[in-house]
Image (cartoon, rainbow, N blue to C red; front, side, top):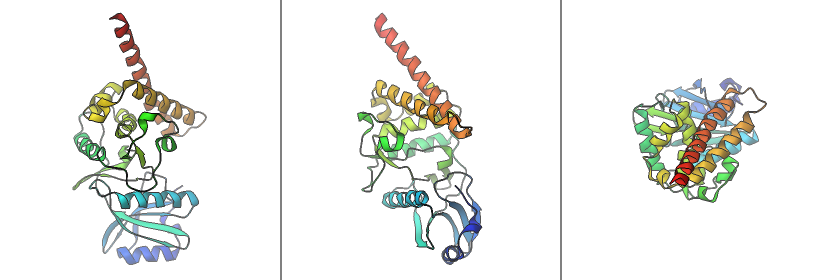
Length: 269
């Protein structure tokens, strides 16, 4: 759960100020893996600061720091510094200035995302402990296993269009998996941006790993992911869970219809 910047111990704020030359903080409006997430401005410029002190928050931030430190690519913000004091783990990341990506049909940001996905699809998982597909998603299939670095949460909130190109932030759920898993996880966000499931799949088909994936595997993934979010959203009024349940359900229903039609056509032949 996010807390206000002013709730940080004085010793933490002072050490941040020593690095940045000030502590004028603007809280982030998305994300929840760290208790503190804010753009902090001082005489030395701007840094995106994350800080955590709960067990979950510290584990999550340590994981993100290990992954970010191991990634040597232009799409991930650099880690500027980190320290621990008064029970807090604090990290300063490269500040990414720009709007969140627009994933609506025809958006020019889709081209930037396509380029980033092509690069990520060729990025080996770094030699650090990463989530497995089952550990990240709660279900598994042999085809999901692989050696590629997969972000797994490429929603607009984690995609920032900067003057230097697209930056992908928040690597707290990075996973070692087959490259098509990233694309399958993106389907829900394309649908949230206004794509129909068919349009989403047509856009994803530009990537060879998508075209090579067995349709039955995609059927399975869509079904299991939709079932997971249906279960998570049941009995809660949390809006974002219901949104994900809706978007994943739309894709699963589309794949079910498409598979049924394909099966009927094959039988007719």
